[in-house]
Length: 77
Image (cartoon, rainbow, N blue to C red; front, side, top):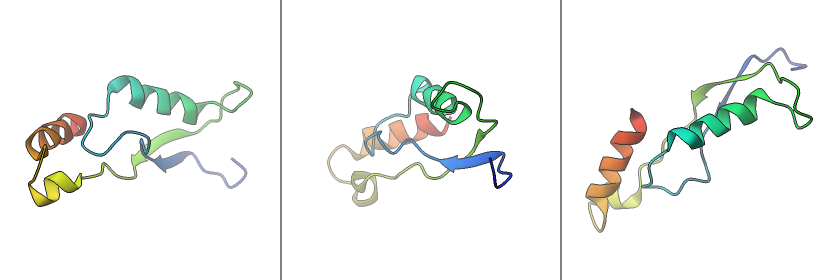
């Protein structure tokens, strides 16, 4: 706030690579960004997704890569 920021760049770092980013998790992060620890409004918004990681299984096409790819596509929606 002091620097005049209005939006931030963040991601769901706690979601394992290859898992779907659920709408509830996205909404939770949006609420976290919009609120200060005391519950008041931060006046910030989540503007940009830092990254949606591509799992090693997708990169190497081994293991569960097909389901990881389907999850990745779902998360992009």
